[in-house]
Length: 143
Image (cartoon, rainbow, N blue to C red; front, side):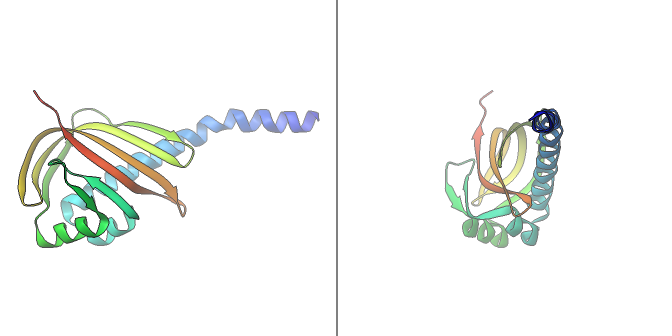
């Protein structure tokens, strides 16, 4: 019983280290994702987005993985700049990660100009040994 208690205590003490690792890995996944969007790196984006990925763009349109890839191929979506106004807020709940941040965007979604400050929310899932983007949404922030 004593060995079990010690093992449990060590596991609980080590948990924050794993949580920190998960947060750092998730921040790295967000950086990779946003760089791939700007570069139109479709190969990376296909790996990042889950098969049932959903995006609600800055104009309120609901887009699937296939829609987003088609938009990027046709240049209906083109992002020139994504910059953080502050560090992203990252929370990890088991295999689910939530990232929220305020970002300045310059570019187009669905052929329509998008430029300004937006609140961005991402829902990620740890799948197959890596973080994958399940859903995200952009909301304009009024000044």
